[in-house]
Structures are given as structure tokens and as C-alpha cells.
Image (cartoon, rainbow, N blue to C red):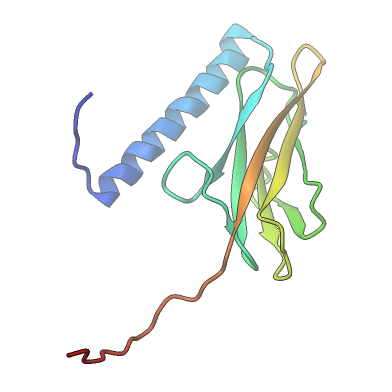
Length: 149
């Protein structure tokens, strides 16, 4: 393994390349190979890394599912069992993305997120993720210096 020292910008560009390759792989599986999807992977997008960090109380996070094969176009749906979390369709119309907003009164440490779709062979497939709920602590804006000795 190589020990690479990358700048934040380089990491973001590398992340974008990885995400593009995943999307290309998925498209090729669907279009060329016709392989039916059997499962998917949910990741949080817009955070610079292909992982799930979580959503701060009172804020929202965007999630995307990548299916491992062909699905019926537009068949992806999303759900959560937590009434303190509101799911909103992605504004770009891509059903593989969803915005999850955590209410300010949320007390649970995480919420479940499930994506479902109809595979090209007609079967229903799902992908589940546990999303951490993070405290929304305001950033420090100052400090006090005390002399101790």
C-alpha cells in the first residue's frame, strides 16, 4: 500500500472519480450486461467521502443508493421508521437520492434508512443503512485565557 499525502482538493477529486467509476459500472451492468440487481449500497453524498457520517439534529443529509445491477427505471423508493425524520425527494428528480431531515427534538442515537427498488427480473430488492444522529453543537467563537501560575 502506498502512503499518499493528498490535499483536501485532491481527495475531493479522487472521491469524484471513484463515484463516477461506480456509476459507470452500474450503468454498464444495466445497459450492456443486463445483470439484474440483487442489492444496493447506501452512502451519504456531499461530504467528500463515500461513507455515512450522520445527520446533525435539526439539519439534513443527502443519501444515495447504488444498485449492483439493473433495476426498473424510477422504481427506487425510500422509507424510515423514525417519525422524527422527514424524507424528501431529491430536487434533481433522481430517485436513487433522498434528503433526510432530522427534527430538532430527535432523541434517538440513529435512524434506519431503507431504499427499495424493482430489479430488472421483477423481484423487489432493498438496501438498509443505520444513520447516526449527531449533536448540533455550535462552533466555538472565542475563548478565555486564564493564568494558572
